[in-house]
Image (cartoon, rainbow, N blue to C red; front, top):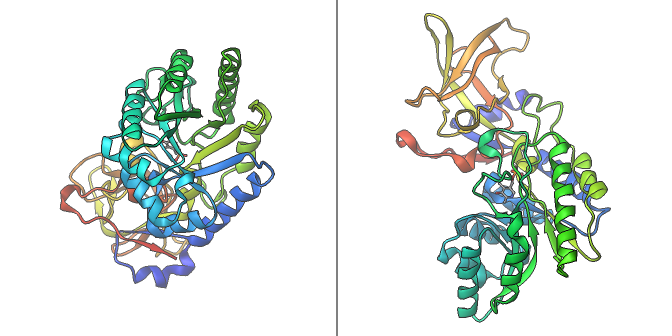
Length: 383
Ligand SMILES: *Cc1c(COP(=O)(O)O)cnc(C)c1O
């Protein structure tokens, strides 16, 4: 794939990100087509997956809302044209300046993660003579079948409020003059490919809603977070995630109350497949036991392999696909042994100067890039 674009790609300075705006458009169309039959469903794009301004503008134009986890993301969302009312603001550690910024902008929802945070939001909202719309992030204590670094919905994780404390925090919110209680929020983890995890979440929310009913409370909004995964092994076979299976799981299992709105916060599923990291082979090094392809991109551009043991498909765009193959460890130039994209990987026989595409890198790639080793941040190109 993308081999037909080789001339255009050859002209780019590497390493860089390349984003396929057509695939992004098709993905957004697929989301909008699936949710069209559910008027109470609202999809917010999780900015932290990819905050490239061109990408954000395209997603805002498609009508999605935004899910932000910092003041900087709120600014990026507003700059890209997401309406303030469509912005949800989550995070365990919101600083005062971020809360003030969100209040001034008039964002749609604070997803509050502790009673301590609620008190600060109440104080600042009162000072600003306004009321903050608040949902509580409840830790549902359901397991998610994913890498341990990206589970967020277990009791031992730092996120959210214990479900046993739900009624108590809603009652305190109702007594605060700067707070409007608007709903419940959940987010159980990321890169979830089996619907079981979302099914377990639905059943847990049903239980919690019964507790609300019994207490005479009503949550106008339920937000089930994000986490839908993508196929890193076969990006060409599955360029668009199974949004039908995802949304229909909630429609089948989640018992919404009259008038309740259901919110989703998808990040990875929207942008991962539309991006790849373009890198050039610097050296093919024959070591004692292994053969290394050393490329000019490293963990500074794409940290997912080092941080989550992620394996991205890698294509050699310069080699003839009918060429003989060899086994390589594909590594970056950074002074860390974890700066390895993949081991024992089959590529067509690869040479210095070849262009490689590290696939499915549109999410948590550019946004997690760093300047370690005094490297410049990678540019990104929309094609
Ligand atoms: C990261 C995050 C998301 C998006 O997660 P994906 O796995 O990219 O869909 C949604 N909601 C919250 C609160 C998050 O922190």
